[in-house]
Image 1 (cartoon, one colour):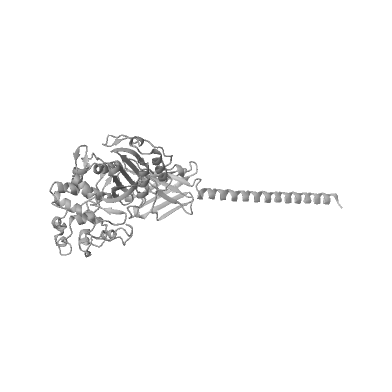
Image 2 (cartoon, rainbow, N blue to C red):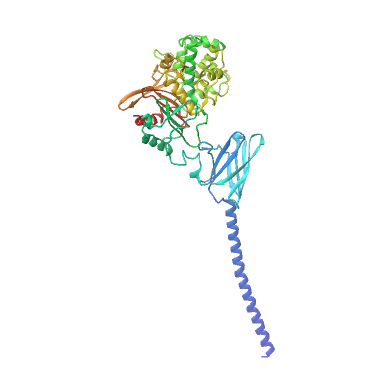
Length: 495
């Protein structure tokens, strides 16, 4: 075999070997490179489609308020919660987090948000577009949910402290000096903190005219003005007593007809002409009404039905009256607005001026919300701070006297807070005041209280010189719900 042929074959075999080796090596590397690229792409995709944290907090700053917005992505889909004061879910139409983009929309508030996840900082930055297309910057920062104030009643352990003296007309003292057991008060506050008692925003306790406990939960504080809801009725009761003392109203036995000239045809007709002011105040006008069986979001609630009417007085006075030999209690918030209309006519003052001059200013109440005048020309529920609610309770504890001045006749305080009708086995009703007995050291003690929807209470127990104020968002139409247990806890502490 010629040497040249052999050399040529050897060269060809060698070349084939090297080519095969190189091809195999290239194939191996190419596979590894492709796998690496796929893994990198998957990791990048995963990194882009999901944020590094599951909990974020954003501060949305408007000119008059800063909203604390909590974003959680632990569930099947993201959730947005308004934690400005107490956790409430936003009514979202749409929310998603996809490819580093966060978007949500609330059609009810004409608002939407576009944000982008920043890998370098771990934050989500974007802009909130509100009504009139105004835009506000909103950045979400990763947080530990346990430290987010507003999601929980407290983010720190409870420690009793004597209420601060604020030169607002309230005297303060320690609980022990007023013979109230601190350990039991501590236990009560812990039960609120661990949510044994639900949705409590504030608890204030006064003994012997001294504020001895003042606690706020979630993000609420002493300067926050609450809508006290139907606790307003008890303030209207006080205004009625003042108008009687001034002879602006002759008698609570006067017919409603006398004080409703704008509705004379309806108020003075055959079925309604016998309705008296006392019947308004004690909720037994004979007009069929059900405001307590169903909640205020239920269309079967009588007040909800009336709210759809242009003129609620016309609607109310057009309803047929029930005939009964004995008075029938029917809790009716329109009785309160009717009484405001009576006072407006009798005093020749609009309700806001009357209330400010005769109650708020004399009590040194400087921050409040009197709401809007409704279509019938009167105001409804008002807003007060808890310490100012306490002032009103102390005014009644002291038989209508404040700083030596008799603001409300003592006789009216006594009469209006006495039980005139018995709605249930445990509850009584006076003139826009609820009444109830409690057990203290195996002895029965009487109380009267103002109650507003959601857990707004001004409670007075005269025999123990005890006042309790509460605010909250514990919605329901039962005035005893949860309140009774809390008062009973406090009574155990009273020595």
